Image 1 (cartoon, one colour):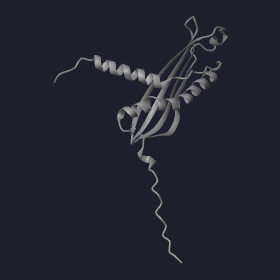
Image 2 (cartoon, one colour):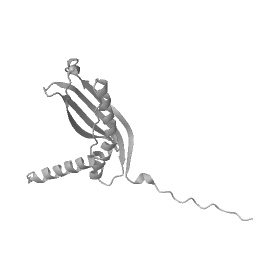
Image 3 (cartoon, rainbow, N blue to C red):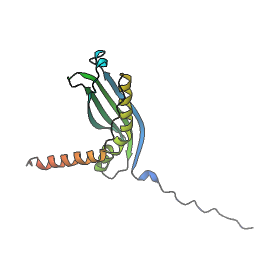
Image 4 (cartoon, rainbow, N blue to C red):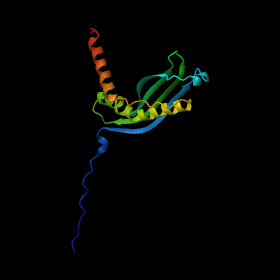
Length: 168
């Protein structure tokens, strides 16, 4: 009979050392409905003009965790200037972002990927609040956060290049 010695198990690649983005939580931080001309606005037959304003923000929470926020404001106005409704939501996500080689890559992830993950929830929150206000749902169109990030980065670079150099 021969004694066999088990060979050591092959080393498993440690995936924790590569870049990671971990979605930890998605939540509606704030949501509001304003109907300044209700109930009279419901007797109007014309279709309102819809104005959508989107803003984004990323907050470093420490320990490689970030809160990313999409603030959406949807205003519906009639041709007379009467406001049918004003909806505002602040949709947030908390992301763990680890092992990226530089801050520019983290900013790119925050300004693109993270926003793409929480935007559908913001869209749903807006549609739900509009329906709760008694209006037909409005579906916000998809947003190309990649293109917006590149545009913002290029504007920032142009502004930095145009700023006068200071000498010490």
